[in-house]
Every structure is written in C-alpha cells, then in structure tokens.
Length: 312
Image (cartoon, rainbow, N blue to C red):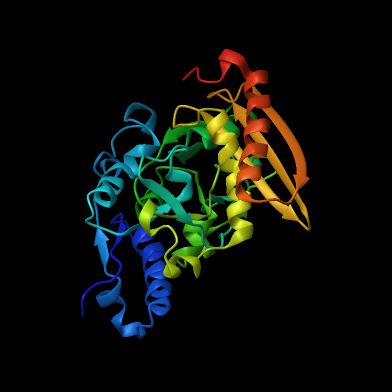
C-alpha cells in the first residue's frame, strides 16, 4: 500500500510514543484498519542536532530550533508530509512555507517534582542537588530556594530517571505530560503549581506541522482541539513578545474558564533573583485574538524587566 501521510518524528521514546498516537489517529481518519497504520502513515525517524549534542546547555548550542530544524527541512524538501513536535520545543516563528496546522488535546501542562526521598521542592535539604535542562525551571527553583545546587541534566526521560536513581541528584524536574504519556506517572512526588510557577509556553501540547498546501487536509482536522489551540496561542503570543529562546527564562499558563481566557506570564532573571509577572483575562476568542492578547501581556512583562531579562 502506498503511504498517504509520512509522519516525521524524533527518535526518542517519548517522541515516538507521541507520534505513534498521532499515527493511529491519522490512519483511522484515512479509513485504514489499526494494523495498516505503518503502511498508510509510516513514521519517519529523524535525528536532530539537539538529540546528537547532549553534553552542554541548550543556551550554548542554539536554542529551541535544535529539536526542529532537521525535521522542518524534511518537510520543506517533501520527504515527509507532517511533523509531530512537542509544542514547547517549537520556536515562536514558523519557517516560510510551513504552518502548525493542528493542535491536539493537551496533556497536563505542569512541571513534575521527582525524588526518591522528598515530596516537594520546599522539603529538600539545604544545598540539595536539583537536576534540570531548563533555564526556566532552574530560575523558578532558585527563586524559591536560592540555596539549591541546580545542575544540568539532559537526555531522555529514562536517562534522567536513571541518574536520579543512581544518586547523582536529590531531585529532578520534568514535564508531567511526558511522564504521563510514557506511563511513568508513578514517579511523580508532586506537581508544581502552574500559577505560582508557570510552565513553558505550550508545555503538554503537541504541534502538528505541515506545508501550507496540506494545512486543510481532512485527516488533520480530526486531530485538532480548539480550546487547546486558543490556550496555546495565548502562551505563544507571550513567547514571541519576550523573544523567547533557551536563553530566556519564560513561563506562561493559559486556561479557559467558561467564556473567559485567563493568562499568567512570567519572566525571570536566570539566577532567580528577580521575576516579573503579568496576568489578565479576556473573552474566549479565536487563536489569532488569543495570540494578540498573549503578546500584549508579554510586552508588559518585557517592559517591567527591561534589559535585565537575558543576562545569562
């Protein structure tokens, strides 16, 4: 059977788990039986620069595009028809000719605190070793606990959990969504309050990216979730306003409450010594209006922070 939709994905277990879920939905939308999914919508594994370079912080390696560049090149060259990204890894701007065509229903957007001995960040002993690869998580942790020894922790989820279990860290911070999708939610000791410490813009959501000519494909429409699109659009509006990359500690948390869209945006000094916040709400609207609302709050935070925002 000739493939109808080739789906590009990173090779990590989490990426393949996420893309496998998308693959099954696409196959069903194409009218194929579950056992035909690999034929009608095969997964095309692509190794990104971010997957190859695991030795240093993302701030030194080029930022978010490290996890999307090679996959986007495959899309533009016609080697794949759709890419599945973790939304938090997708830069605010889109390359010419590509579009985020669908946003599936969101998983839990919160950060997870994982430890063998402690239930919460606040419970850690003085000078405890906390592992994370995120500048935002580092800054938020230090804002609460400036005594902590926050160390770089990169690699896939299993690698990070193994290092925790081997005693390299007293605790680590991970995205709850990834642990849930991998069936590893039992390791979560507690969840970080997303209002006190907003997660990365788009965290917990997937981005289905295509070329412009495929953006209205019927098999994409069945995967799209409107409320998630609106919430994520607001968060990404803030991301764009703050020129967010891996050198900027930014958090944003949007939630729909009836007809109201509420958004909290935060930026922090990398060492957690200062944080700037803005909050607001508006009537639920389309994604374009939500993006503009997020951008407005992001600019408010940027004005508060001034030139102190990107001092890495």
